[in-house]
Amino acid sequence: MVVVGIVGILAVLSVYSVRKYAASAKTAEAQNSLGQIAKDAVTAFERDSMSGATLALRTSAGASRRLCGSSSGTVPTTSASIAGKKYQSKTTDWTVDQPTNAGFYCLKFSMDAPQYYMYSYALTGAGTTAGDSFTATAQGDLNGDGVLSLFQLSGTIAASMVVNTAPNMVVVRPEE
Image (cartoon, rainbow, N blue to C red; front, top):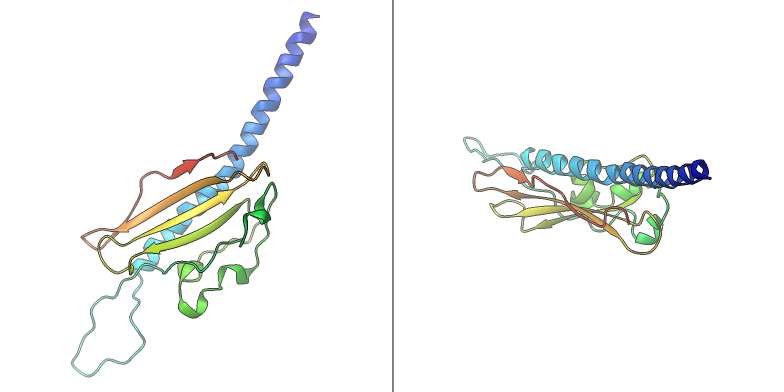
């Protein structure tokens, strides 16, 4: 009887550990993707974004750095698409802002693999001066209960005209 009790306790603990491990593995998607979006935002800021117009003779143009503009929507477009399930995006989901060179298209970010989270990218300010910032967000509903988890990573243009990203990610209800 004691052996059966011990086996039962170990079984309960192992089920809990496996669920915890699976949830942790799924949250790694959001953390890795937001880290990549932040790197892509810094890279986009450092790209020269001057127009293709020809300069007049004996003139020059200054460096023209800019954060990418906000994405026009989330990928996927609704949280129902990731409620307790994975979403397989299409290439066009990530390139909807191509005409304005904004959002995920400007960042050159996309996901080919099925995803557990809904992603967005927002710019505050014009993206060209100190104090302007971006926020990359991932929201998920791993257990399908309608309560969303939240992961956010932000960055700000410093006075020295470099983009500083937050040292930590904001995480709210990671296993929801």
